[in-house]
Image (cartoon, rainbow, N blue to C red; front, top):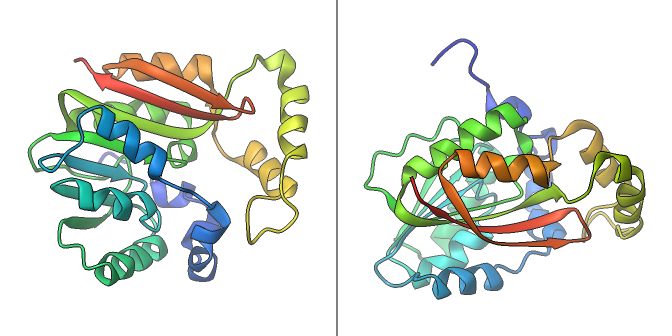
Length: 231
């Protein structure tokens, strides 16, 4: 690896490396993967399909999609996340889920190209330069025509309007950190993490070889993209 290459573990966020925090992550995230599974099914996900879950965390999506496809590769850079993910996969008796400890920039895909790639709330850990490389690497794991489903914190406003939108976003935060993200946690995210503007992310997706099929935004801060690999 080149000596200028990013060590993703240093950007993963200390909390994601903490076993106690990770143990409560699923409750805190409150994430229901049903909608994303349905989106992929409408786009052809079936018993013969292969899926990569990049930044799989504790495996909420990977475990939900596994019974509906042939194989899932669940990838995450955090040892604490990986430990719980392996435990949950084993507990669910899923023999078609392969768990890999790696990041967007270190995962080495040696199997045939997959049909679907899914990633949620992980790409924002990388600065934009590295997002571009990560998205190109994700595209390389997909067969031509394969689908990327991307959910992340993406800002759908102009810089001049940032104050208004960020304050509105923080106002909708929860007060109990066990069941969601507090205003202080969201403010820290804005300060130290790398969520980007929609008008920067979308050209990065297109340069990586994706056609954007659909996009949705919630509170100008959460984006859901469905993309097809075209090159």
